[in-house]
Length: 258
Image (cartoon, rainbow, N blue to C red; front, side, top):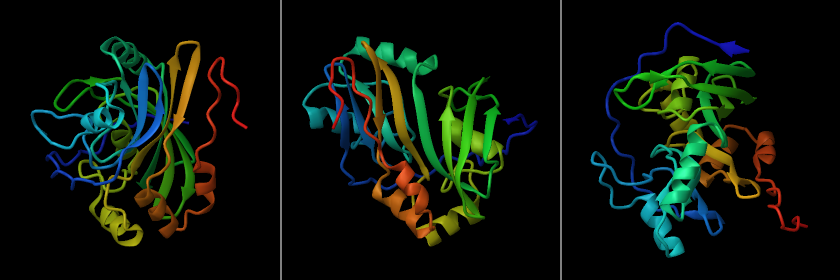
């Protein structure tokens, strides 16, 4: 099913207040001689910007964690948790950034969305390349994993990597992400905070599959406790087993895990 709607919900164009700094540790998911993948906590920026000169940023955390300089390859929003890649050289960062830009990386996200979207739907709808910039093509496939009446657990597979793409596309479907201060709904955000005790953006980058010399690398990021606890409070217990990380396929020359 492909969705093309003539109008996108008008977002509330105001800059959200910075989220509280999190003390959650940064989990190292994978490291080799070219890159590292970490499980980004919600509430932490990937790196400093002029508009957000935070002292506690993920790039510095990872540098201190592994004792080496790292280069960012892609970004996750401050409020999003999950798998994030850093390269160990500027050249490798450039190569991986091109792979992300041209669809060479498979990405899977989990989101709590308002209401009950269709069981499967593909959204092909342009979104801005950045805040205040021109719209560019964007495409995301969604699959509903659990329907709870006033909320749903959704799996999102973006085929392009645009600014707030998943958040904008779910809002475009009239099923915005929970606790989204830009595109969300007030009553839904309040109910999610009250019933699920979730106080951060309900979006998690669950896995990445990216090209590496000799093959591909798949890395899965476990749900953080605040997200998994929220799902349990909402009664989403059965699907949690299916969301548990599976063993990644061995790289060329490696023996399979036993």
